[in-house]
Image (cartoon, rainbow, N blue to C red):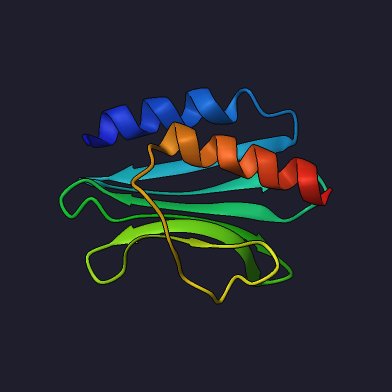
Amino acid sequence: MELKTFLTELVASLSLLNFVASIDLRTEAFTLKGRVLLKERGFLEIYFNEQTQTMAVAWIEEERRIWGIDWDNLRDWHRHPFGNPEHHQAIAALTISEIIKELEHVWKQNS
């Protein structure tokens, strides 16, 4: 996926969530790093590298990941489930839009 496509899908997906307070994204060459402030429940940390296709989305609360979905060339696609974020649960490939939809589902179950 190209960085531009990732960024477009990410912003479109986040704009649909009523629990997003603010979005701060920075791109540099072929990477995106960002922080999305969530209402009353921490923030999302987001990373994407166009060259390696590495992707990480982590919900952080009190300086600890409480949920996330990642892809890297060591562990492939995996989820860090809410309630057990140290665990690596293998999953099928997801788009950033699908990851944000899953975040919405987890948010609704745990807020």
